[in-house]
Length: 68
Length: 147
Image 1 (tube, chains in turn orange, green):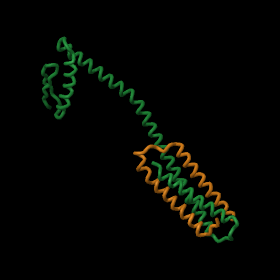
Image 2: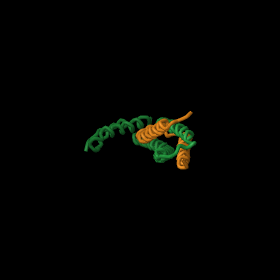
Image 3: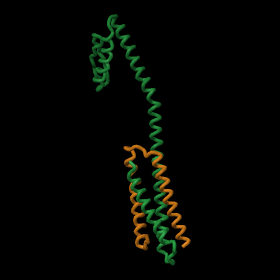
Image 4: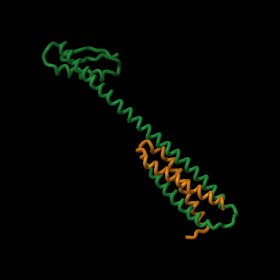
């Protein structure tokens, strides 16, 4: 699959929108916390691992882009 | 002060109490009366003595139950506090991660905007960017589904 500049801009736009969704969900959470059951530790670990992996992937891309 | 007429074990008693406490006093008297009437035979003093002993026994039993339940409720409270603090810590970590990702994204956009000769690795980088978009969207869905 060959991607042009517009498609990569589209990808960045999607990432920005997804980050906004995460921010909004996190901002809304304290209001729901009182009436809800805590997230299981295993789910939290999986979520953290995925966040760390995505950040690592972004860092790798930036390093590659830096090198040209 | 209010005057209340109580009837315990068949004998009337005139008792004073604070205004507004009449109903409660009558209710307590009814409890004592019920205990005293449950004791057959003997003098009135003996009936009241046994009623008092039975009520003291009830009170002691109730206190024992409360004492027993307290450690359980303490550990439940501690568990809830721990779960809430873990939840809050996880949320803070996630927020920090979002901030880091946004910073990384800005850096990436700046690098992309800078004029440079097209590199042979660009299509691969773009593919990686699309995959990251997929993963972050999946993460957003997961975070939104947290109860």
